[in-house]
Length: 160
Image (cartoon, rainbow, N blue to C red; front, side, top):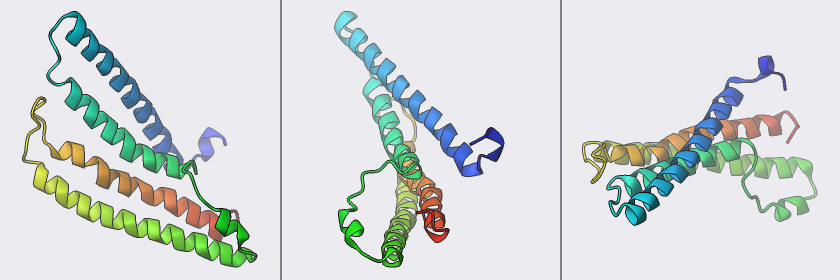
């Protein structure tokens, strides 16, 4: 696909993939620093574990949406392949996608409530709002929507 023909979603998820890679690299560097400071200098980094935990939570939830967009999640579809009718198979796939959308909507709503309750709390070491950690879940659910919509669109256009 040429650069000019990339959709907004393609550009969004390409940018997210870059951020995910940077998050993994930052976690790797932080863990190396933590080991060096703890075992070589005998001065553990107070904020190290908290930082890597926060980054990994974000990478997990945002990364899940990115993987879903690219069709990379594991799917157990052997039962679906046994359905003889292509139309029924597509109806079942659409039903599954609608269930994912429902979960995402509930996740956005409930996750946002948790973020609101925890935003005024501070983390122990870094003293940042605790809600930053929890914000990864509703944002990951929000990013799931264009990923599922892409699959629904492909099914309806007969490409799925």
